[in-house]
Image (cartoon, rainbow, N blue to C red; front, side, top):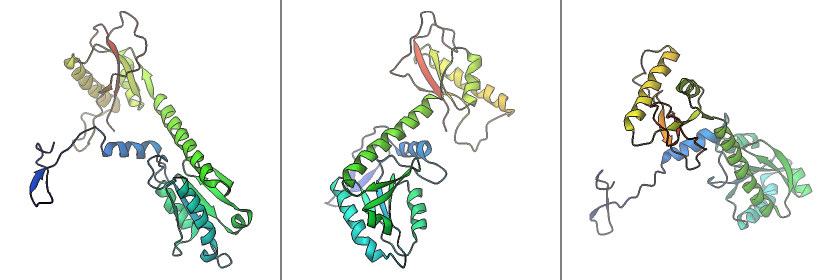
Length: 268
């Protein structure tokens, strides 16, 4: 890639060199997928393992409970969380009120928020708010580092399970062409019998025919030239985990004997 695109840099000696690169297929698209899958109307919802900031501590200060009074308590929580390996921050800014800070960190997708008010200090606790579910719980500061580390693992698992269930609910097995495009129109991924990747002409046929039928179903003559994606189906992958393929099963488009199940979808 460095040679192909003439990507160069200046080394310590002031000489121009071509950059060494690798390509693992992990691009900014993965970030986009994460935002689309987990985000909501409030903003980002980040899985704990990739969140730059996992916990934010927000003091609820007032004239009777000043930031100077809240700070030592919040900083003691911060130290315990850091000792537990948690990426965290104490938001001690006085320019913004607590409500503004709640909204700010929710938009940024921080998995956990700890709210600390005068009653929390008195009861040696903090109010824990979970970003992805909105759940709220009062939690003791005794052993809070280990407790939140466990909670973050639970959030990670819950978010993955929710996303996987949503994905799986949109995977539809289709063996008859008449059901192919209607399922695409319902934003589904379509799993079909397939004659194999060596038959590229039949893959092109699927793209062409699915585009025509989709446009017809929508009452459109052609795709907008300005659109970045197409209504045509494309192969996504041949899943490693293959459902049973009964002998004699025919490919959904060619009528040839199917060799595997193939997953189809659209670009979004």
